[in-house]
Image: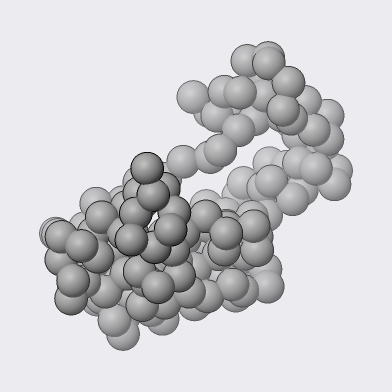
Length: 146
């Protein structure tokens, strides 16, 4: 069943319908994310180059617009997993950099005065073996650290 945007129902379309005046944003590094949501349902659609720019954009948006819902996609860990390999020192370095960006985003939420009314969900999309993923193994399907 398609929604009014011609896509499968998403959190963006459902929120827009339930609360039409909501401030909704999607800020992402990997351009493939741009195909997964109805652009007409969001106020901010921003594809940035690199996680430093993505996190900075998210922080600025949080502080200025105080969004009702914001999806932020950071890509460094996945990128390093494919280029260098999963479970490598470089991979864990990417996790540390991502942790720093998460801290920046959490600080922006505090700076915006939204921390008591904000739910933050962090997740990874998959694990990996060597430089790949996609097979049916726990190392690839299970989220790292879970």
